Amino acid sequence: MMSLFSLTLTLFLIMDPLGKVKQFLAILDGIPHRKQRFVIAREMVMALVAMLSFSLLGEYISAAFQVNMTTIFISAGVILFLTALRILFPKEEHVPHVPGNEPFLVPLAIPMIASPALLATIMLFSQAEPLMWPMISSILMAWAISSILLIFSRPLKRLLTQNGLLAIERLMGMVLVLIAVQRFLEGVVLFVTEHH
Amino acid sequence: MILTMLFVVNPFGCVPIFVSLVKDFEPKRQRFILLRESLFGGLLALILLWTGKGFLESIHIQDYAVNLSGGILIFLVAISMIFPESHKAVKEKNKDGPKKEPFVVPIATPLLAGGGFFAILMNLVNKAPMFDVTLAIFITWIIVIPVAVSSSYLQKILGKRGLLVLEQLMGMMLTMLAIQIILGGLHKFLDQSHLTFANLITGG
Image (cartoon, rainbow over all chains, first blue to last red; front, top):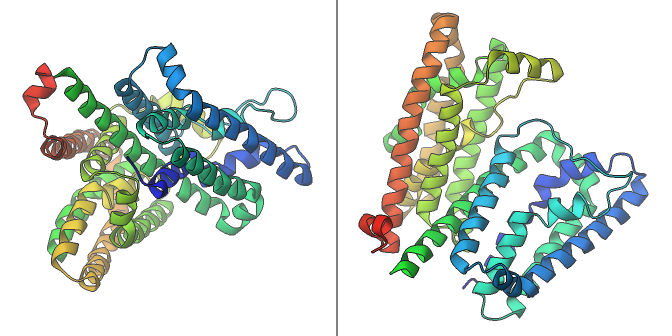
């Protein structure tokens, strides 16, 4: 069981808003500046809905697919690890394809903010936590901080400069690898104890 | 203390690795990259010293995970040195845009300020006052920076063929280093989680 602060920090790190500022701005490039903030806010609300539903329905989803905790631990670790590798060793400057002119749900809300790695982690934590409220409130807090950062992504980019953002992106990648490995190993411990 | 740090950071041993990592750039640019990366490494070492433990504890990351992650990343770098992308692919890529510079990863971390270094830091903090450790990092980096920057001169001595051979050899050595770090992490993991190797294999 983790404290409220740990939960919030972990979720915030996996949401990784600072590492995504660059991609957000690239995707929103063709949209007038004033409208960008509105689009970001709207996408963040959609991402929040996805996160909350995975937190509340996680138990039923895993029951429906008949996956147990060990599986969720290990797969959350693996997905997060591969996501982090993409950040650390980028294949190419990749701007996700935007269907239509304006991003709607895809790609900003899902998969960039409510990424598979984040949703798997939320599913995991929600089932590990005996109480519902710590989880919901930490999702809300991590989400609120990320939203504020992303809504101000343009001034943030000016403040941190291109290279500053890149350095943060890389460091976040390292942190995500750490979290991923930790999750994976927790899954291994669970697996071995389960097997006894 | 400084000797321990130097031994772990191992700038002299890393020289050939640095050369292989930056070999595609102009010598001037190489020195700039290496200077920047070693400064980043030093900065990161200080950040790790002052906030690392609290940060990792607050997101529930054990020290074995630090070792394993560092080892895995170094392993991936090593593999890309042993099996470099084919010449053609590299050339096509270069047409499209600027070549990919090492930025923060992998030189600053995990090669210079990586898992092993972090483990040493945590060890030293328990024995010596914070100020001394900070000073030791500064002195260590005063040695590390010129060594890293001057490694770009090694390229001239070695020539093109020498560099290719060196890259392969260093890839191999780096793989071994990575495996060693990973195994160290696994030992810690098994100790801390009360699993034995037999348990892991047979599950019994």
